[in-house]
Amino acid sequence: MMKKLLLASALSSFLASAATVQASVITDDTRYDASGIPGDGSSAAYVSNWNSLAASGATSGYGGSTLTTMVGINNPGSNTDIASHVEISFDASVAGTWSFRIAIDAGWGGTMLVDGTALDTRTNDMWWNGSWADTTQYLSGSLTLDAGNHTIDLYTVEPCCNGGGDGQFSGPAASGAFTSFSSTDGADPIPEPASMALLGTSLFGLGLIRRRRG
Image (cartoon, rainbow, N blue to C red; front, side):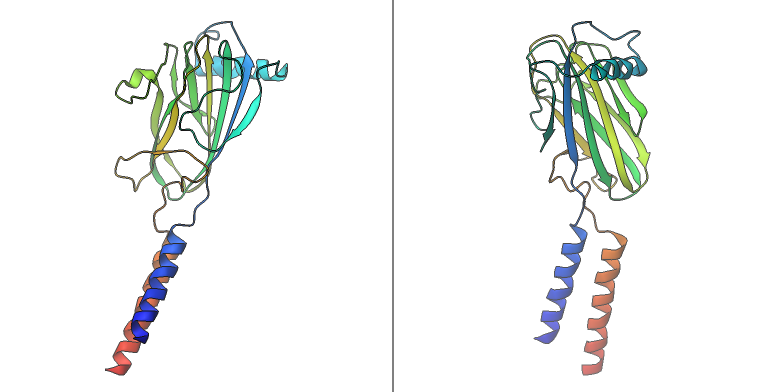
């Protein structure tokens, strides 16, 4: 009976430790912009365009907010002529290849950067409409990340009819499955080395107890 209780305690401690991760923090800020595709349509042009707009301050109907999820993201404020900057801060639980796909209604295109480096840029009319089938309708890419905190920056421009979107990640342990960013996403929650060591130590102790009783 005691052995069963010790095993249950070890497994409980292991599972609790393995599931403890940092949640993602998402902010969305908007400005009025009816100027079209920024400059030459490069990633740098989208970033520069936003920086200029942000420096002038928000006008009525535009501004910033903190989001709890990327599911159904719909830029706050006016329904038209929207320049948007979405920032996602997240923790990569392990080092390895991470994949991202972000869908924001952006008739004049946009760019996605990870830790300040451009990962994808499109100037076409991106209208996701709930389907990941057409890769031209959202920003996506993969790269190798170290374990720890990272930041995704999205800069987009939408002339009309603001619609919902989504933003997702797939970590090294996800086998290609994607999870939407949120304040409770548990970014790639797989057992950390310390958690595995805890389980191993507990099971080793149970083995000693069994051996002594034998």
